[in-house]
Every structure is written in structure tokens, then in C-alpha cells.
Length: 349
Length: 261
Image 1 (cartoon, each protein chain N blue to C red):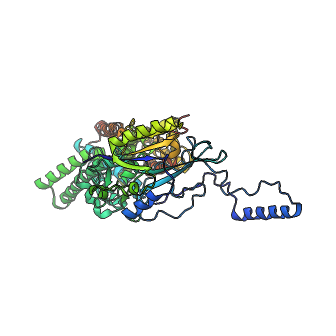
Image 2 (tube, each protein chain N blue to C red):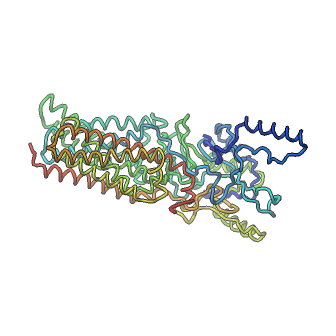
Image 3 (cartoon, rainbow over the protein chains, first blue to last red):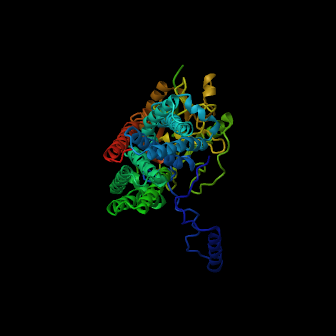
């Protein structure tokens, strides 16, 4: 593949037309006066860039941009929400809480267990070879750990939802209860890492904006997933649950803190989160995940838990969670295009 | 089986691109775009899925006295870039299918019959070498001519190089050669000659080593490349903290909520 090279002095380049006009002018002047004092035509792109320790190799990016397509940020969002929903649902199940939350959480997790692999497979360059990922397990590869987590999670979540369906239709029986308990336990066990491993996945890469934030990304993504899971559960009619309200508020407050932390850090590597299109998107995602739902939830607590405020908070949190994942991937592209960082040029002034 | 390496000596490179052509011919690598960069004689830019060898044309501030440069003309360096075949290879560690392996010659090889194009190696390479070919779907990079090495041949690029700028051989011998060559060039007055193999970083050295004039950064070689596995520990610690927060938060929220059935 050819790299899309942009000349460093872009914009300064005269069009073919203007340089031709200038040439004609010089010729006329030479003919009439016999002398030309003009500097002549400036060649396109001049002054020519040089390779130097300050300018790198003509500013051609060293790193390659991620080759992932639109499925990946969506996968991060769906997986995060489904994993967190499974955890919330399992805890609700084991603490004997509201049965409807347990049920709805199972359906969210089950939907995630189908959509997530579909998104992951469709992003592959060779989707038919998905199973090649299951021929090895590599602890040092977050992608490998993640795929196995996905397999475990999908199995567990699907089993729990299947048991739910069987119980509804044919009543409870011993084998169904075994499937239900095993599925619930597996979806809790695998749901915990599944809710946030995608932060490890992009944190442990060569992309500066991602690896600079490697320690925080999994927590950030996990809490973002929790926001989306709580929001979805609330929209499914669980908007009266105080436990969900508390979880939603906690996640929103954490996202406020995360946003402040990113804004406070003056690191060159984190610039894509603050500048340009990726910066705008990151801030929009942060606003919808943090301050807005937090304010709405506090307001709803103060005004006797009206449905409208809880639902508005839920919608905002879900949109914020999705935007946040898109923004992080976008920032990764911007970061990979920045030739200065991997060369250690202009770092952390 | 000998552990092999490339030593690319940019003081000998004449920028003829025979290595690029030989690589493309032997490995049947497709065309990589017919674009004019518009600012240097390098119209290729970087190694990638369809460019496994790439000659960099480094135009620097004039420095008279070497290479026959006239005093007012830019000084030229050429350097043939290639996959570094790292000792701790980010792509190999990241590959979830096991498609990327270490060969018996020490090189890093993407098995095309295993790779499923997940693209994780692309973001794991600190040198920006491996790339997904969007038409084909799989990831590609220099194979270190594994097929040729198997039958005792030099890699195609080293074979084609007319000035022996690309040397191929046993890695220890090449390191000694490089040491001698650097000393020899310094004796001749090239004070800015450097040896680059990233051996003092987490990458742990490379099987494609370089002799360069001047700062490696002007050749787009990172002064401190890091293999991304160095971030694993703190990232997984973050994941554990995140999981605990999620579980703990849910337990506290549901236990505190008296609303039980």
C-alpha cells in the first residue's frame, strides 16, 4: 500500500496556472527590458523540506494507522455494555434483588453475546478464518485473551438467557436450573474482564495516545460500559430501581473524574483527545457520559425520582458511552499520523 | 541453523532501488501506488503491505567534503529500510492466531495461510512496518526471504544489492563487521556515523541493523522504540481495578437497596 504523502509545504504551492502566468510575465519583461530582476518562478512545494533531527523524515508518519473498520468501536461499546450488564444482573441474581433486572440483564448480555462476535468477525480481513484465533491461547496478546473471554462470555450469557426462556415456557426443572446457574456464573466470571479488556487491547499498542493512557483505559472503558448497561436496563423499565440509580450515578461521577484527569494532563501524546475533530468528539462523549447524566441523576434524586429525568440520564449515558469509544479510536488514528511522537520530537515541552 | 541478520550500510547505498525491485519480483509483491510525493526523490514514503524494502532518500543540510557534494548542494544519504525483525517483536506477541512466528533463522514471519487479518499486529509494531492489505485482507511484511533462506540462499534484496550496502549473514559476524566499519568510517573523518539496532531498548535488538550518518530520526528510525508488551502490566492492573470497582459497586448498590423480592 502506498502511504498517502502530503507535501510538508502544502498550501504554499502555486497552481500550475499561476506559475505559467508568472513565467509569461518574466518572458515579457526580458523581451522589453533585456534584464530580469525577478527571482523567477518558485517551484511547487518550495522551499523543499529536508530530513533532519527536527523534522524527521519529511514528516512522513512512522507508525501505521489502525486498519480497523467501523465495527471495532461499536464492538467496544456493545461488549462493554453487555459485560457490565451481565455483572450487574448476576449480582442482582445472587443478592436476590428485583427479578426483572436479572431477566433484562440476561437479555442484554445475550444480545451482546451474539452481536459482539458478529462485529468482531466482520472486521477481520478474512472473516472465514475467525476460528484461527481459537487454535492458540496467548497470555501476552490482549487480542487472544479477549477472544477467549468473548467465547466464555457468549457461552455463559447465551446459556443463562436460554434457561430463562425454557423456564418461561416449560417451568423450572433440575437440568434447566443447572444450565441457568452455570450460565449465570460464567457470565459473571467472564463478564468482569469482558466489560473492560478492550482498554487493555488498545492500551498495549505502539499508538502513543493509547499507551500513554494504558493504566486508566480499562477502568475508563469499564465504567463507560457500566453507564451504558445501567442506561439500557433503565430504558427497559427498571427506572425505579434505586440500586441502578446509584450505579448510574457512580459511573457518571467516575466519568467526570476521568474527563478532568485527561484535561489536566499536559502531555503531547494526549493532544488528540483535546484538539481537532477527535478532541471535540472526546469532549462531547465525556460530557454525555459524565456531567450531564450525573446532573440529571442528582436532579432526579432531589425531585422524587421522576421517570423523565432517569430516562434522559439513561439516553445520555448510552450515547456518551458509544461516542467515547468512537472518539478513542479516532484519537488513535490522529496519534498514529503524528510523526513527532515516536521520534521523540517536540515531546512534553 | 545460523541466526541471520541484515546489516544495511547507508554509506554504501546509491539509492538504485534494486533491492525494492528484487524483493517485489521474488515475493510477487504488488504495486504500491504510482504517486509523486512532490517534495523529494522518494515517491514511496514508507514500508508497508506492498513495500517490503524501501529506499529512503535523506536530503540533508550541505556538508562539503563527503560523497562529492558541491558545497551549495544538499547532502544525500540513502538507506534501504526493511522490517526490523525485532528480538522482542510487538507483532509476534500481539498476533492472536499464532500466524506470526519466529523462524529458525531468527526472523519474524507472517504465515499467510494462518493470518485472519485481525489487524492487531499493525498497531503493535513500534516501527510501523506490518500493514493490512485491504484488498487481500491479511497482514503483510518482509518475510526475511524465509523460502530462500530455507534452501541456503541470501534474501533477494541482499543478493541484488550492487554495492553490498545490504549485507546478509550470521548476526554475530555482522555485528563485528558493523563495529569495524563504523571505526573505519570514523577514522576517515565521518564523525557522525552511527550504528542502529535498538538493542538498548525493550525491543532488545533487531535482525535488521543499520549504519547511518547522523541522527536516526531523519531516517524515520525511532530513538527509543518500545515493544507494546511493556504496557501490559499496568493495563491489566487497570483491568483488575476496573473489574473490582464494577463488582464491588454492584454488590454495594444491591445490598444497600432494601428493595428485595
